[in-house]
Length: 219
Image 1: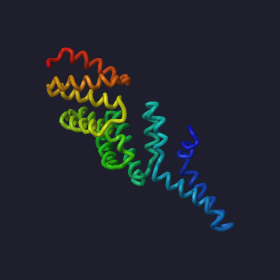
Image 2: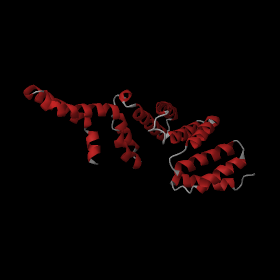
Image 3: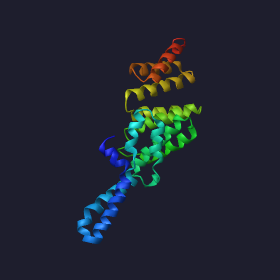
């Protein structure tokens, strides 16, 4: 773990230590000698509550350690104090974890909350499409096919962060179109997904399964 991550992990405790030191120095020598200690204390304490420990989650998410990521998220005691774009990411990540547990109702509520907070923020612009895609997949899981199509079309229009997400979106749209018996559109979306040459094992497997099915379809 890098030095910055170590600081973020223990930021609140360090802030409180520096605050105590600042008060002691202030009492015995005066305000100005203690100013830098007060400054560090305030920056650390305010940073803990406004920015939280979300940077620490990246390592866990990349490793697929959802339990570790959830532990970090649960350490945020007052999410309402988080800086608004950070709060948006917080709720989106909570939604992703709920989705991984197949708690679709909770996932939908949390991800909607994250999207509402993130609307118009520069921090969320790169992930808005991915969030909409997730919402579409949630709607599909709940058999709300009309809503699923709406969300995924929005995700494609907004733009997705990488070809893996794009392939997932086109593949999901292919399933939706086939479910509506719009076979030609389903095949078109399938071809778009395949042309992206995704490497995520789950998506590759879905493409293989879909290809077998599409080969027997009319249109």
